Amino acid sequence: MSSLGPRPSRASAAESSKPRPDYDGLIVDLDGVVWLGGEPIEGAVEAIAALRAHGVRLLFLTNDPSSSRAEQAARLTAIGVPAGAADVMTSAAATARFLAGRAELSGCPAFVIGSPSFQRELAHAGFELVPAAAARTARVVVVGGHEGFDFAELRAATRALATGVQTGRSRRGQPRLRYRRRQALRA
Image 1 (tube, rainbow, N blue to C red):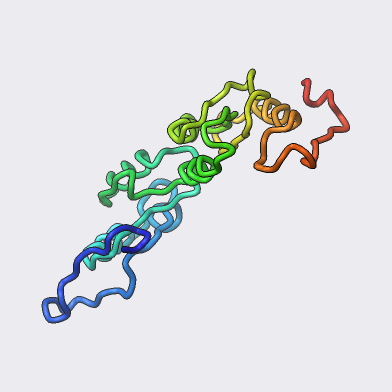
Image 2 (image 1 turned 60 degrees about the horizontal axis):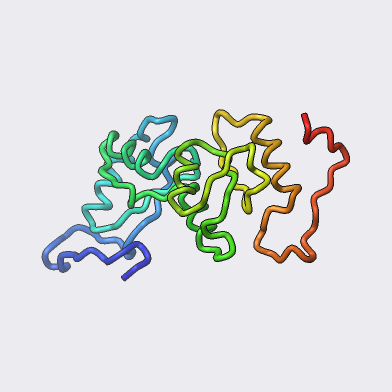
């Protein structure tokens, strides 16, 4: 079994004259490979269909933190590439899995800057999301870009970091952040 799941069964060489790849699966980036600016790239849908016809399992990957795996899968399906959330890995999902896998952070209070989908991904991974007003109580600050990013979020994250958000190291010997202009944090 590969890391992409069970290997699909394939017809014997005598049963098929189609060439078969020497791999079980591919990780396919979305933006710039499958689509560009929301429009499918010419030939991408057909290439994906051909790979699947040869029994190649596909995992779609994106560094877009603003949409969920289900939203990306729906976009794929809409352009003619049937996909479910399990067929997609986003940077938000990877971040959530990585942080949840760290025992000292799993389930802790988190100040999350990001789209609603990004925040849901962290909440689904077991983190207790705290609002900007309570950012100093967070043990971890997680940032994923979103269109509504503003100075208030930046200030809250900076304040949380200045109070010693856990980084996975012991607090003894952990460097403290110092600022020359403390008033910048009060703005």
